[in-house]
Length: 231
Image (cartoon, rainbow, N blue to C red; front, side):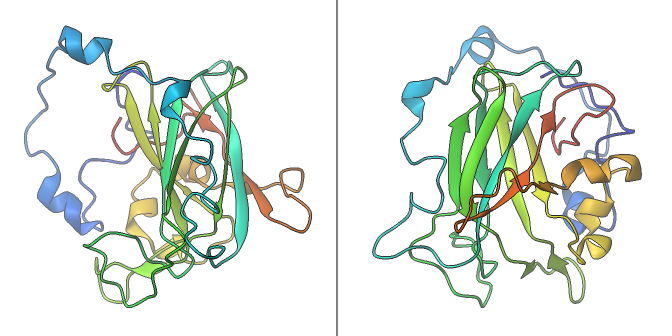
C-alpha cells in the first residue's frame, strides 16, 4: 500500500464543494517524512485481534432485540493490480444506522439511535483476499455542508496493511442511489473512478429469507484502483 497518489483516480485534497476540505487541505506542497522503525514494524494485526462477532453488525451490538432496518451482506475481495489476493488485511467498517444516525456525541441528527446497533465491525481477508460483513443498510442523513445537503447511503471502509502506516480509507455506496448526483464527496472523485465506489447487487451473495447481498471489491493499485481518501 504505497502512498503515491494518482490524481486521475483519487479525489483532490481541496474540493470547494466539500466545505471542510477548504479548511483542512494543505496550502503548500507536502514534505515526505521517512518512517521510523517503530512505524514500519508494528503494530501487527492477527487472528487474535478479531472477535467471533466482529464482522456481524447485526449481532455484535445486541442488548435486548435485533437491530432495526434492512439486513444486508457486504462482501468482496481485496486484490492488487494483477488481480492477486491481498491476504490477512484488516478490514474495518463503520456506518450510520437505518435511520441515518451514528453512535457519536457529535452526531445530533434528529433521528433515533438504535440501542442494538453499534455501527462498527472488522475482519481479516482470507487466503483468497475475501472479506464478509453482515450489517444493516445505512440511512441517508443531513450534514450541513450546504442547504438541504444529504449524504447518500454509504459505509466507510478502512484497510490496514503490514503496519500502522499502511492504512487506506474509502467509502462504499449503493447502486441507484438518487443522492449520488448531489453529493460533493462522491462528485469530488474523478468521474472515471466514481463507479468503483458503488457496490453491485449480487443475488449469489443474497441469503434467502435473511439479507440482500452487495459485492464491493477493493483494488489497491493499477488501472482499476479503488479511490481512497488518504492515498
